[in-house]
Image (tube, rainbow, N blue to C red; front, side, top):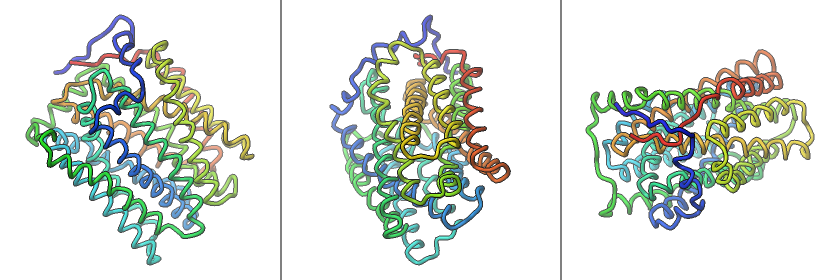
Length: 420
């Protein structure tokens, strides 16, 4: 059983790692290639995320159905997450990542075909979102495990911050692009762009899996390997605490993405451009976060950063129903984006440094399972609350839940060093 080292003062052990310049991991050629290709792929994925959610919201009046788009994207991690971790530790990771990203491109292409033919019903969109989510469930454990092998050990947290930056740059541009183009050309070209955006990533993975430095197969896919991953993750008290924080935080925070189309449609009474703009503003705030996080990480322990981030995001959710004017919405949502990025990158950095490479993908799959649990259950739950009480009360309640958890649930440290 893997045990987590306790340290006298949280975060002291990794304060030097946190002083690593954010751009330093880009000096590694393979990481740099994958980071750039992922940036383009993430842009396509966020364009698809926008198009799928707004397509359902604009065609189906049900609050619950719209919220299910987010649930459908996260649910595959609940179903396949632990298996994905075992497969990622056993299979050659470059080859696995090539296959699952090809599957993602296929699902996006199918979305484009259905939308172009006028056959994109809410249920068909949910099914294809679930397909893409399934590919991502198998992709993320392998990707996170590979990232830690492409950079020096003291650069892992900087690499996680860079990956989060890439994700958020794309999350800013993708919805803004989608919002501008949806009314003009519809959903089909946006889904087609998603498929095309993955070609660069597929080319990098294809070249890598044929090169001598490609990661080779590891452990055998077996019940023993499956149980070993579970024992490592759940046998460590500090890691269990990290899993609880992750699931609870995302249960409340996912209300923003799940209910945003309904907030724009029913509360603001605006169209696709406003929805894309608010998604972009959240991500614009998240882009700013990595530039201030290194200094904050030196001064404050992880659990304090997560607690403050949750409180800020909760305050944003609780205030959102009271604000209608775009000039006031912009700074509010951007502040929420900064809080979101600080929370996610801090939790991701802790999870990625927790265990050795031999079981890293399996233990990361448990972490991603906790993320998916919070997001899937939260999306469905807030959709039901919005159906019963209305969108504004649902957002206010989600914000209150986050504020209470930040005050009461995050009193113990998230250890800075969680090695064997």
